[in-house]
Length: 420
Image (cartoon, rainbow, N blue to C red; front, side, top):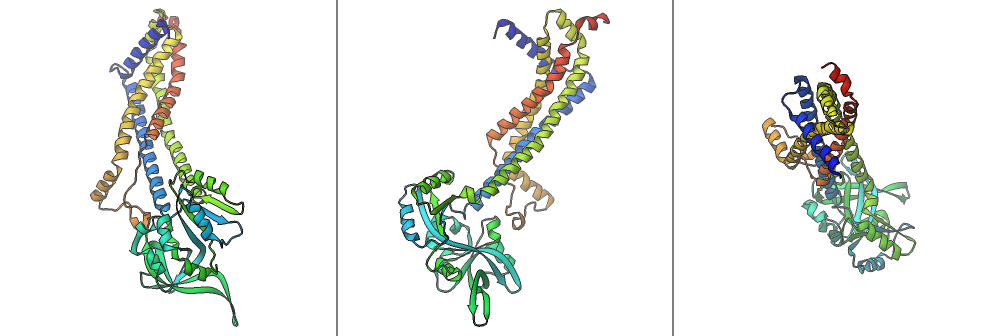
């Protein structure tokens, strides 16, 4: 930058910031400027807090749901997979694969007394399933190993068990989508299963998921030694899509390979879209606050017409005058954005304590775990979000200053000084 350009920037910044924080401004102009700054504080703080809470919910959702979901799945394109043991051994030889477990799954109707609920019945090998998912850590009664005990046993989600009104030791009647032909006619296949365990991850699977042993599942669903597919646990959850893609290339064409981003991807895409829409809505609050700066600067330009004329007669160019009022507007915005960012970060990092304080003060439980699956408001502050909010707010503020600054630069000094 030339010395002349540096001089323009220096005096423009000095005068602009002096205008922003001068105590000699018109009182009404000062009130409008204060309202603009408070609006910026509120918008920036709200946006940072909401983004942190949305991140917290996404993290909770991912951790809870994916605790029961395998990283990948290998299935046969024709349906039943009969030679699954050989394929399992082949997959486990891959250094990127930590564990492989067979499964059979289908939608069923579970009943207890007069209560009926739809659910998903998944047959697993209890020992292998413990290596593929974290269901063992989610057990709140009994154990998954109880599925391998004698008899027909089932492990239910805790919420599903509450809806059915059963506890461990009770029986539920399972109706599977298979037909049994008897001399009296065709009837749906049903079986009484003993509840031997309950699991709870604090998410939707608690309301519909049920597990039985692989042997029980083969008898109920008529698989006769075959399975629906293999669950795969890779060395890293987030690199699982690439790992499963490499596995697919090494398998024959009649195998179908999926990963968790395909089976659960719609849910997380919905969460991501919701975060984007909420961000845009709250950014509109920042935009309103930013464009309130227009009002402040328009009144400031009218108030400083004489100063502008004097500067122009002293040799200041239109670009310098414009830079003064851009600095004036950005000075006001920067204070509001800075206070808002600090406030938002403090609120986001202490949101759990604030929630607990409000609950103790009011005596009302804001987040009932039986309803919301959470006991406190989760928050995950990400500095990339904070940076994005600050930069977007500064950009909106800059855009808001351009028109009033341009109007100030077009003031003719002769017309102003003629009447002074």
